[in-house]
Length: 156
Image 1 (cartoon, rainbow, N blue to C red):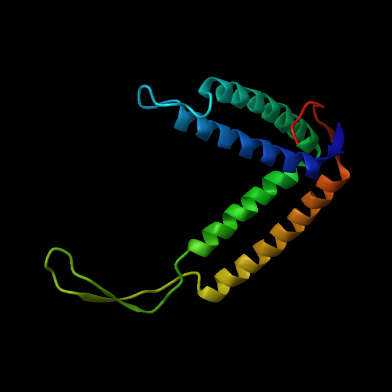
Image 2: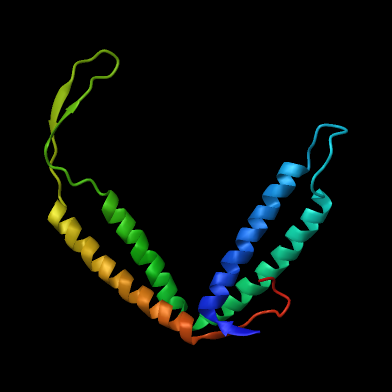
């Protein structure tokens, strides 16, 4: 069946969710107290997990092939998001801090100095966020325009 890349991504997430659920059931139902009844068949569930895994492979493959035309944007978006996370974690407080002593030693007061102040970090994060938004918009547009062929025997 021919669908948009956006729809294929949703289908991938649905199949992955069902696969995770079935795998959890196998883990839960496989081991029971001897002579206690089983409400589900672990062997049947394991077979279902293998079937869903095969479907997931087919969908992920179709998505990967379709993404070849925009892989640079995908990689750049990942790296921009990584930089955003990094700059959110850079400490920028340049104030006084009381440090508790260790192993019975007394407290001390430390005055911090920062090389990248809060306004610089905010500016960097703002520019990166704007770039991430533009890349995401480009990717969303591509996902809606691009068609992929998925196997006809998919659930859902």
